[in-house]
Image (cartoon, rainbow, N blue to C red; front, side, top):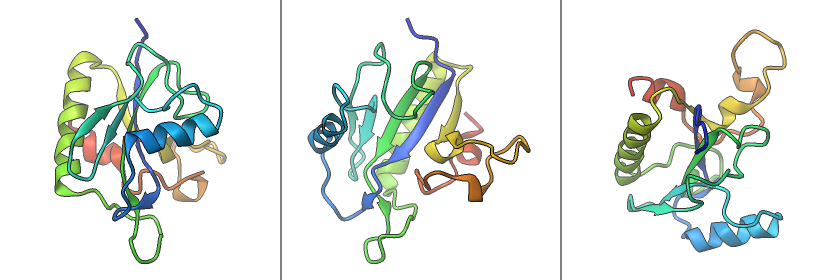
Length: 150
């Protein structure tokens, strides 16, 4: 069994009105050389949670941090008109994500929840990841304070 110390929230970085399926994500990841989808869970706009990689398998979602982490991705993350990063989670996605994170925290109580952007390097070495240090805006909302109560 893997030791899990990190649960990372991602977005697909697609417009929220774009239909993206778990099959699409699997194809995209295979095209990048992954053996299958890199995420352990994917949450559709209607709040349905789809299983990706088995939890027993190392994911492919945060370079250098996959061995001890779980990756969760919601469909969306970009404004429908401007394609700029935006928290586009639907109420159903927010509810499903909260429930999934709650379940995972019961199984892995020591795991920290963060967003993909929070895994960026701390280039100024001040002990936190500043906005200007983000390699990506993903998941387009601040997951750490939103889920610190779990």
